[in-house]
Image (cartoon, rainbow, N blue to C red; front, top):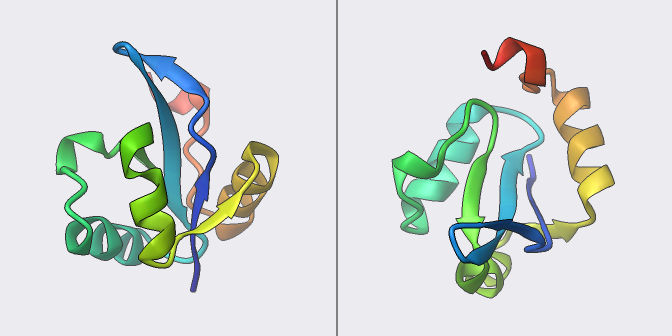
Amino acid sequence: MTILIDEPRWPAHGRLWSHLISDESLAELHRFADENDIPARGFDRDHYDVPDHAYERLVAAGARPVDGHTLVRALIASGLRVRARDRR
């Protein structure tokens, strides 16, 4: 079980954002988010969007930093990935 986070590089709402995922289960992801005060409104079907100011805190709490490609590959391999066309 691993929680992964990519570097904050996705612009929206005047700041940069990271993606937080689990490589195993949504239950693990929700538990980690809850334990680290990530609001439920940040959940987007298979990941949490987290603001840049939370990145270091989440890494210190155990999220493993990875690049975006590694994060997506891990999400696909976990079977949790929700494809863009299925988000509609």
